[in-house]
Image 1 (cartoon, rainbow over the protein chains, first blue to last red):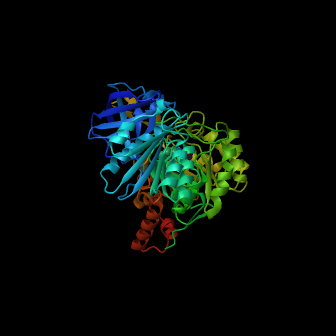
Image 2 (image 1 turned 120 degrees about the horizontal axis):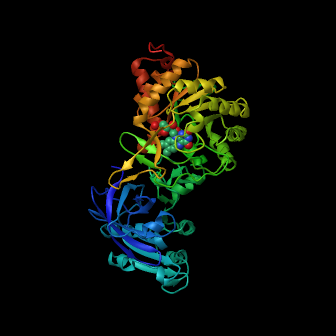
Length: 254
Length: 305
Ligand SMILES: Cc1cc2nc3c(=O)[nH]c(=O)nc-3n(C[C@H](O)[C@H](O)[C@H](O)COP(=O)(O)O)c2cc1C
């Protein structure tokens, strides 16, 4: 089946432009997604957009959606009872290993796949997770209790200092990395933040994975439009999560 | 086992080429296809100016077919030329697919890519879902003639392939027009016009409403087109294109008279690894059948011609 059909069961506003939307399956639900994997959400007469899965139960799918224009502006306004199509899950998510100390960096709407990762990490032996959420100001932070209740150490950064560390999330991460040892740094958020996180990981010799964004259209590797430039890798099938190694090998033509 | 072949004056290490539109137009992805075993690549169709293409949904797949209306997005030829140069580091042919909304545009794009090192040009006379290009030129033999002449005179001695549409009552008529106008070879075929609905949502799936059918359902149609063209044009190099998943699909094309095949939609299920698998399975087939080379197999006289 290409589209699995779902009905919107709730839509909760989390910040001025970020909503939590819950869907309920009306036929067969999509198969289990791992943290970082994504689906294509089809809103009839509006269009399709890629979304990473935030939570998934038998019949339910939860998304945290940011209004960044295009079909996402409509997606944040989905109302109870509306029917949509979902296809996926697609791509490769974050790798989760036992006995690992993770530092997670979520920039704004980059939180959902990392929150899902926190959930998966809960039941994995020997894993500890520090979850950082960064935003411009306190009013843009969301789902912090969610992360805490799943056992993560939670810290926040705001550009204006209205809550938590004053500054960029990567500056907070730099501080933590120089104070303690982490085995892996995972990030999701704006590309600039991802690149900064990547170079931090390199500097501190920490394993890195980041979830990137490109123009996903077919989502199955045949239109070539979501290529990670210079790497020969497609975001939709090889990503959206890439390790430092995958992105670097490629820059040297690998 | 030697499975290399000539398609016109291009020598290919195997008869398995990447079809247009799959790896887009970024050099690193074209190189990935070549490194994964494609013997040549055809780029996504390139136009003079930047084009956005259609918004998603642009693609739908069922077990039996795919349908797409990507809308020919691209950066425009000027920003593409550097990618041709960079894709050419492996000594495998890079064939550039050229488009146009006028005869002059086809010619000027072809001239630019030929100058930047394209090893051949494939003229997209067959995209079924964009107004003012593709099938609109490619279903009229007279327009095919004029486009092919224009492109031919623009690219010097580089080989020119005309990519034909199956949306016609006479594929031979289209092929003859292209070859008479100077095309060095043919690619048969592009997608069949089609559409698909989601009956639960009561909506057409593609944002463009209709699109082009590829994959398994297109395969027998494409094989027939190659056969009809081969009968009409015994010596013209022909790429068979449409629904190559397994080596048996490629063999259909060779038995129908194709010199080589292009692989597109099956990459969604098989990934770029499909090229090495096809090569291996072709070698196995030829060995089992006792052929000394691929060349011997394709040159064998067949009673259906
Ligand atoms: C996503 C997609 C994009 C395509 N883009 C182009 C294109 O830009 N130019 C072109 O000549 N053909 C294009 N095609 C057609 C293919 O090159 C090929 O002719 C057709 O899909 C049949 O082969 P297949 O069944 O192996 O895919 C495209 C096909 C697909 C599926």
